[in-house]
Length: 283
Length: 267
Image (cartoon, rainbow over all chains, first blue to last red; front, side, top):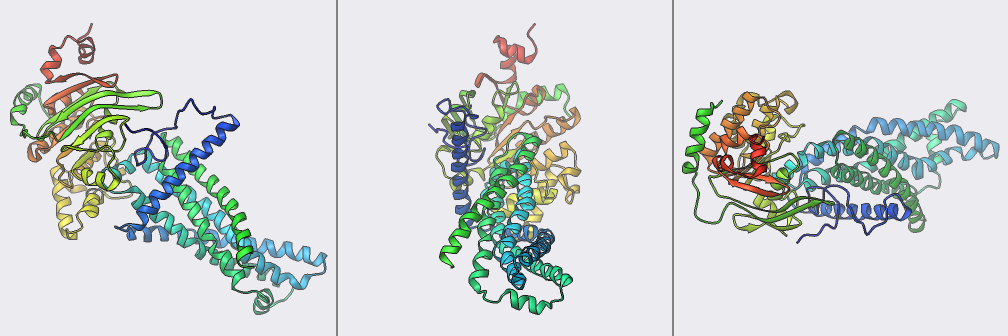
């Protein structure tokens, strides 16, 4: 006798099609019901993550698919991330100039821009932009494969969809986020300087020297590498939401939307925790 | 395309042609139960299929025919009961062990389920690429050509699934299902959504492949004509269980009301 314990992925191990119906639990729209549904979703996500982790560390490895995803997630996101980083640099420069001038601290402007960009805005903007572009892309692609039985066909061919589909996408997100963050940081700093220089002449060399004065690797490396956690969250949630989809075209739409919403939300929540941890461990 | 006379001759001689071994059945389903939520789909179904034999599973829409196939290949897990493939119980097997057994089975999905990002050639090569790594690229290419020639699709190698018709997609799906030379072939509504000519062509193809490969085949369909053409035995499902199992003539001579209604004899 096999009991139904989980709703991770229909057609996979553990498997269940459709939402669980259990009269023992409160109604789904009551506060307890919502909490129960969230805990259920979280538990299923944990089981999914375990299956993917197991598939990722046992051969055969899907290097070809990984390289494809590195290209898809990395190079295809680069223009968007660079543009978002640049825009953030401009806004930061304008806002910081206005505020610091009011408080008589205009000389701190380069440092304020540099620290803001590398500490927080670069990583979080990159995380949110990638969760929008890549989260929706992965969620919709895998959901579409799910509803057209392509994922079942992969399984029926004795190939693990965790290994072939989920692991390369999640790994690519983890590996690409720090690199995209560097690009976002660079564009943010460059445009921050351009905005500053247009208002008041200042060479790029001076801007960088003043900005990084007193900064060390602890200001740069932990915030950049924390985006690996963002990549894990984006890849994991998008693959999970995509591969558990049901309900045709409407289901694909729901999977894409929920991938973006949930991954963005968890990126922001993770950022709160990671910023605190970085302040503790890299003071 | 078959005429009715040809079909009668084929159904008459096929059981004799079938190469049924005396050992354990290739597929044995016993007392299988499956529910989705409060809806009970399969209610203690039992069936066996031997090598060289084709069983058609008939029934109204929503009676669990496709679920039965998904249980047999392990895409769903039963609530209770057992599925045995070559006398090996699937229940409780890990993904790796299940993978070994799945390699002995070919599955044609209702809508072919071709990978839409891959060409026809790459779709058929997919199982070979993953499970026949000892084969060189050219050997894999030759095997793909051979498989596509068997289903009459050798001239469409570079086409994408979206560029070919539903009938052609099913042919490619069939070629992919045969890539690993399975002992067991599972066909989910092979003629659904096809015009009568394409349906007849698919039926002919299944008969030809069955004669060449001597697999144990289970065909889920609600197409009586197709079932009569390609199957040695038929099993009619209603409310999650087998109402009657036997030859087409057995069904015709049955006085069970549901059987007569299904065959269109009921007033």
